[in-house]
Image (cartoon, rainbow, N blue to C red; front, side, top):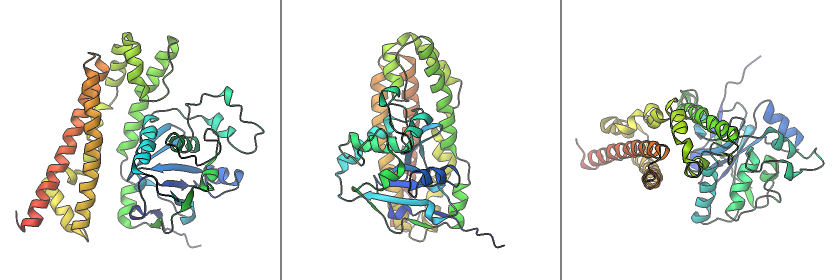
Amino acid sequence: MRINKQKWIFDLSKLQYGDVLFSRSKIVGAGIARMTGGRFGHVMLYLGNTIIHAERSGVWSLNPQRLLVNDVSRLAAFRLKSSSSLEALKHVELHARARIGSLYSIPEAVSSLPLLPSKATDRFIMDRQFCSRLVAQVFAQAGINLVADFNFCTPNEIAESNLLMEIPDAVRLAEREDIAIAESPDYNRQIQKECFRWLNKIRELAEKHKVRQITSQSDVGKWILEYPRFDEDVCSYINETEYISLFDSDRRKLPWRYDPQLMLEYLISCPSPIEAYNFERQENQKNYSRVYQGRLVAIQNARSGLGYFKLDELLQTMRLGEMIAWRDALDYAEAVMCGGGE
């Protein structure tokens, strides 16, 4: 019997910031799709070459280039029919990023299935997440109601929303380079594991002392300000992990971005060097802006004298240094390509 070795992947050139992506895994996702009478078992938010989604380990980001499937029907992308303002979509992103580190709730995910007679919202912690709640909630907080009940819904209810339309040709056949990227070491996953190592210890600490619950990573700063006596413990939890040392995860994955000569060689090797350059410049500007703003907030918070915020300031400062090195490599490549020599 012939084995189909073809793989499929999202065509990032067809996607836009704020798109809603769907997938269906071979076993669990297929089961959810059958139970909910639709095509999909998982839904995610696309924020321009990064995805935020809720999986069983919690809410985290994902590189869309790692979503590789062997059946084209297992991936799809949808977009708002009426173009929302960039400001509204930025609110969607803001609320999504604020949920990073949130715990996943299997009982609440199951309760969203149509087989259950009621959804008893008073019995659940509404800050716990599952994939469709995450997407529906963050859009609702930006004033875009994809479904009637954004706390309890399924991926297929979102896909059937009258506010969304499917994007044609959003999935393409994966090439050898795509497969190599998808199968390369996933430093983002490593960061996630290290983050949850210290975050779960903080949750245990809060529970032990019966103080305010930590639902996501963004809650930790507010919690430390409210209970500064735990600052030393929190810092020790973070320092026991590799979380801070993974600040250069993108450099480990794409070293050519941070070396002027390697950047030049990469761009020249692309089918369209100008198009590749423009993409890299846009990505750098977007990430630089986000990290720069994050560092300003960290500097302000560090004035409290609390160790947790000093660690965050250190992390954001190192990340900003990476963004500057990336920008410098682009400046060098631009000068050479435009000048016609080194």
